[in-house]
Length: 393
View 1 (cartoon, helix red, strand yellow):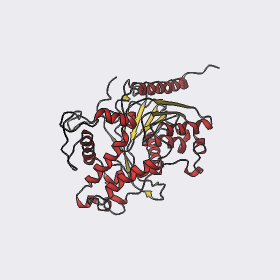
View 2: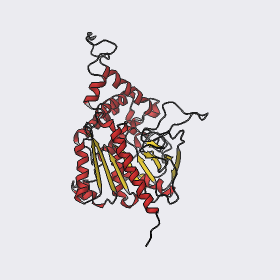
View 3: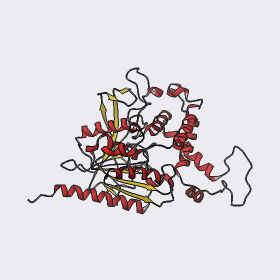
View 4: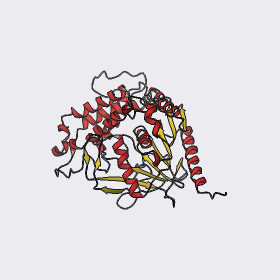
């Protein structure tokens, strides 16, 4: 297996209004995207990868500096899964990653200029939903001339987008791969998101979301938000194995410093490091928008909470994957999706992988997980090949 190598993002501008679920309209916007592999002559081998909360269009490969040299630590967030000879093989598939509106990684978002005012959007950027993102992605695919996708795949929030694709554009995808996701957020998950948002909006540097004009960033709030989120991504077993109760810079059995404010335990040091790193590259307004999109996603809402009725219109084949130690999006939530699909005799495969890593397992190198995805995408490739075989009457 080899890397895709250096990849270059592309952008596509849209001046036709995008009507949002909130009733607002995004009149003028740009989407940033990357593609890997080659589109076959009949444009049937395209796979859309939907990104999760703090990810982007940069799914695989490396970015380059001004001299064209690969930048260290610039690998795409799913580079272990996507590339030549990898489970999602770019020798066979044309893979597309799109940065959603509202993000802070190039597509139009709070850090861009509002054409109506001439000022940065900031807190005035309209609320976006999973359904809005799918509509925007569909427009970009229209421009690329891709009528039907071989598959839409995503993990976590990306899995919600994949599911929404199967409902909003049922004829435009053949396969829907939903990994470590859920049909909606539990009250506990909404609560975690709300605590993280409160940390941001109560930061003195937030300024009602218009902190750009003040030349500051609400770093304290972003740090705490990331620390809260990161705790939920890891399992208790992984945290115990990584850190246990080990003190920072001291041998086991040594006494603590007995401080209420200093970093005492290794797990505290790790969380502060993650929070500091996050506050350097992520936008606070984007965090508020994306966590709200997570909260709002609920395809069964307009069907009186009946998920089976909501999924009835889907025609794609489904692969649903969960991980045993994922308590943020537990296997029980994936099984809700499976049951709803089975109720209508949809073609669905389900795998529950016994992995110790918690929610982050969908990003990691578990050999059973990758073998499963490899086999599934080989099946899709075989289907495409059979479609092109000459038929003898």
